[in-house]
Length: 123
Image (cartoon, rainbow, N blue to C red; front, side, top):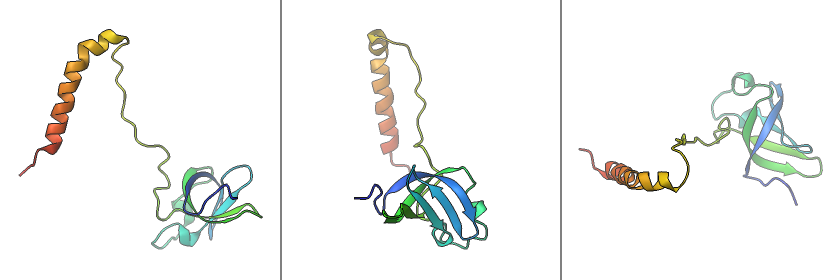
């Protein structure tokens, strides 16, 4: 049974760039190729415009050969450079239940106002 499934999106490191595509290392065993036709729906003049050597990118698995540990990959239908989800900054307000008690009503009101603002129909 293969470690990688067709259609899954995994992380890899760019280890080589050629005119015809990009070589990607997925782990200690599996390597893959993003053929130039799997880089973009548009014309690709230079593969280097999309990736650089050493980049860690997201890739979509389109075929797996478990005997040779080779994987065919694609980046044309995914946001391949997005490595981490965007996170909201957490504001430190102190510690202990006193902070919760002091701020709970304020936080509830802020949440209600935010919900009301988002549900207001603008004309």
